[in-house]
Length: 135
Length: 135
Length: 135
Length: 135
Image (tube, rainbow over all chains, first blue to last red; front, side, top):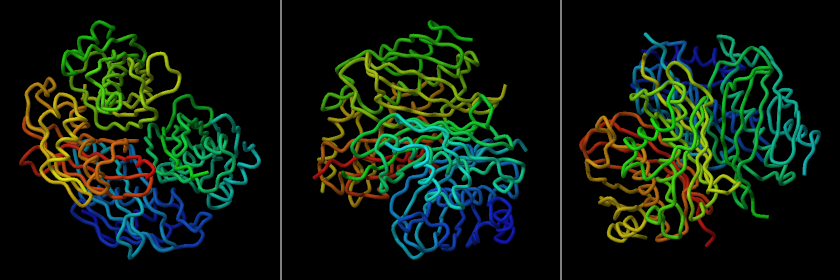
């Protein structure tokens, strides 16, 4: 319904500062993998990637999962998101792996795991829901 | 334990881009009110303030509530945050009103309501918990 | 839209074991107060009221908030609920105070504070959303 | 650290009404699978399994995931739980599949998917955290 390049365009429109350089690694079948390159100006004191930057990456990844099923639906909006911060991210790129757990007529719901690039243990876990506009 | 000016300094350190101009309206007794001035470059297409910007304001407001009780504790970290987006924010400043519901030895927990400046109905509601480092 | 007695009937239908004796203290204007009497068989080892019992009370209280605006809508269903357990409840009745933060066409959202009867500090805080059926 | 039979004993102690007949299908390595047999008296009007019953099953499943790593730790307590109800459960047994995403010194965090027995799509998804007592 939407391919990598088209979704990278959506990300550049949605996320301030030219999408912060987010790359779409894969998208399709209710799943998406995105990468946020490492940039020192994203760091909090202590050398960790800020919570809002992690939240923003999870949010746009879940949006990609929704668009992979629906195509480009500009009016789908996040209604809620829960994020748990599990480990201090390394000073490295973040990779987000999202998947839908439900796509209904009115609501979509899914989850995203965030990893430091090359790491095996998740640094954060997010779940969220999107409101789908009437057809 | 921490006053308005000292906490504004914390905010400038924590939040990228010089705190995005966040003002601390009041802080004390487990509560805090912060204001995020309106800036067109924070807007999403459709004229709304982005979810991550709302999340970031809620996060730093709750952190202020914690520091108002503990004083400056650099190692307190957000462990989880849930945000519900309730109404499309107006193209205006956002005001956040946070309060603690619990301050334990190991965990703090509180809630934040976000309003468009001058609005009566909340645009978002967030709850979150912080891990308190051992004394 | 619904009064105390009518909502107590709803509670008896919804909650197993004859509503566990839940009393509706007040209901109206998007708010509701309910009381779960103390019963030793609800207790967990250690003398605390079980998490699922607290969850169930919060759920039905929020449902009351919704019905106070909409009247009896049997098809409204809980779509999500987050509960934070803040303090060990006393071996006493629980009082729940709920209020709506949004009532939209498709989704309602609100929060509930739970107290041990006579206590001033909340033992738990819940937030939840309900899906409203098309009119 | 704990085997099926020992954890079934824990469940009978924790969950009212003799554990409601919950069976432990497997437990180990930070994961657990539990089954809640179908009982008509658990049903809500409309023929669905009540939210609190689903919540209770998810809670005890996540507790099993924690105990599978720590052994029997009576003082671990749920600090928060988020549950999203995705589909109306069939009038059938529920199977819960839980796994830990983090086990720290002070907090454990994991997720649980609930399925109607034999179903492929989850009926609910829960995430939760536990406070680990000092050793």
